Length: 372
Image (cartoon, rainbow, N blue to C red; front, side, top):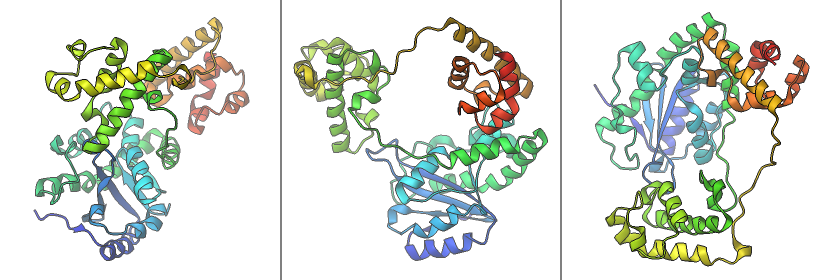
């Protein structure tokens, strides 16, 4: 089996884009390097159109701007599996926006598939076995091995055939409008820049005092500089859990760090002194320089709303069972809680909350009002 071609130049990419414009649908995927480098980036793009599969290597320096009109054309269907991350990466790295999305993972969720990873789905419907060992590969390495090239190509080669199967199942269930709305919303997904201290992005930081937040911020700033220096993702320098333990224990010596999870002797030898310095800086920060964790408006306890929330959850359980869908796919807890607190009594009031998607309002609205 011959390997698919890899395009590297602007001229090759432009010629390919012109050819893709003749197709009514194309399958797309990408590989990035978030597991291996400080600043993640797209390292490879895969396309299948008709019988042809080929790859684009953006690290070779070719200009991908010729793909923008094609990818933004809603008349050409773009098939992805789990498109959320890919759409965000394409917009960030190449200013490529997607219109005409068809996400096979969303379809799998809405027809009630219990396992909807690409390997699981291709195994179920085509009897294929994907080698998962390349999921965490470093895709910046060149040249790509033949095995990596075949793996990458395999992510798009069967998507067009998969669409035919899934689309028929969605139509039988009458959920075409459901998935179409989900596709449209997903096309708008983008990465957002998070402002403010690094400590505000760490799970569990909301339970810390301001002084502890100051220590955590110093540790995080050190880790960020070290990750950048070594060109590694943050977690490969030190995990959040380890940093939080350092904050809570506030060690005053390297010896006092012994036994902290995620700090084996090897790392303690390498980083013990600089970690101690970071903790010391945080402890000695002036009061006015300490970070402040933003607190949302504190909600007063509302026993009646809590009861309505439980009724809505019980209703959702019955509905998800009837529709053979995962409850979280049908409607999430946050939305149920917002509806329970607002306690709308008619469909117009429910719609005005702006928390339900159109398909949810249409298919579930009356049942929610009855449950309330």
